[in-house]
Image 1 (cartoon, one colour):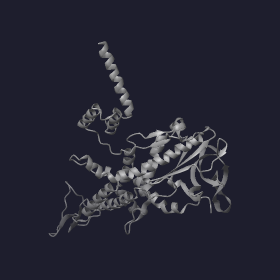
Image 2 (image 1 turned 30 degrees about the vertical axis):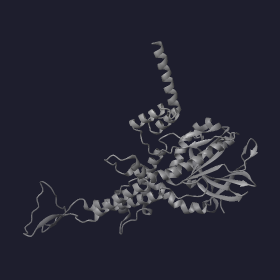
Image 3 (image 1 turned 120 degrees about the vertical axis):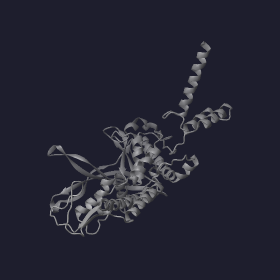
Length: 460
């Protein structure tokens, strides 16, 4: 089996990943796929088909939903306890990507395709470990076996691409495609890198050749595990989950097809068509409008406009609105028109419960996966990762505490039925504290302010 072979689960889900990614990228990506998403009408020429597609308007509910969910998840900064890896979080990937930006990228990818991989590796040049991210399409193959009474990842094949200098032209870069195979051999972690080459003999045949073989170590000791983490929408591991927004994507593409038909119909029926009978034939046609006169010697001559008065376009317009409502119900609450009447907090929570359930499962998976990534960084640094943890925000749709509620809580604290720390915590959850200020910091500022006031009054 060649090294570029893919897992059966990969092959099964690759079309869904491509569909979700196209839906997220927008109209140009959808049009580029042509008949995969919108079939040409009968007898349409290629140029007519392109014009037909261009008349449609892709309403990108998928991207809007993903952006809204990422924004809801990161409306509060994540809590990160990195241990010995704290100093390298500002550039966790050796590409100037901070760890919190990596977390956002992971959230976005899991929402779009339901999968994101992170490899922990070591750079001899930088003399430190780093994290290398992989999108779903680049996690080609894997194998999980039962060893010692548990499931163990024994092989992962990862696709990589980059640019290398052309040896014949210092100003030209050539594409290079690689496959990195991580494997456990007799319980020892190994890495093999294969590069795609084109052989001139035999009709420019392409194949992958082995160019590098490594046995990474930590403090001189071989690794007994593969330091690769795969985050899915519901789990952490190499089992594949279907994209969480796939149903929304299907409705979004259906909306696109309706839009092409609807706008195509408007193009041909929106403007009245003049018709005339009993007038002399003219190779130059007839002008319409002020300053133009038509004459005929026939008493039966007549002229009128042909206009569309059917129900077809109205039905299409209703279907478009119905699809938009379905997209809102399938996770795109940001697509709903704002309600004019005030809505109770309980009603809002009930209406957004489905969105929060989707986000909650994804953030829990990200918590586990990102925590494991920080743990691997600590192990490469020679430190046991005790206390290392990543917790993303779970308060997705904040409700600001009212003034009356704040006063009542203050009175409860003053009467000794609640600690000041708990009061500050509730104020923070109620959106009353300044962004970036921890409850403990707020309490210390209050105590400092009270001390200053006491000194001022004593001196006065």
